[in-house]
Length: 175
Image: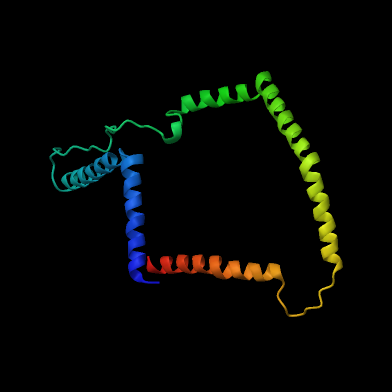
């Protein structure tokens, strides 16, 4: 595999992560800037405290961030909110209405499934059993000859599995 393709793939992967960071996590850059400022101010404070007697440097690491905390996927912001929602979840989970809805839905699914199995599934299963018994009753006298399923598997392995495996190993070695 050419290294130019791997370079292009790495550039594409990097750009994808940058676009994801910009659109999915836009406040991350502000927090990174604040973290760098906190580190610089802490190092400045350390050296000023170590080598001089003045307390002119400001330690910003104890200040609350200017970015409002918004948890992803609509998760609760505080432990109290989580505890309340967790308690409400189990109350609603064990309610009579929820259990009735669950069993009603389960009944409808099982009813439709049983209709399908009686009309379509059972004949297909019986036909498969009969064909399997006929297939198993024939003797295989072709020793050292690949069967049709084995030939199909070997082709799939050759055309799909090995190229993917080789690409992943080459990409890991490249990176």
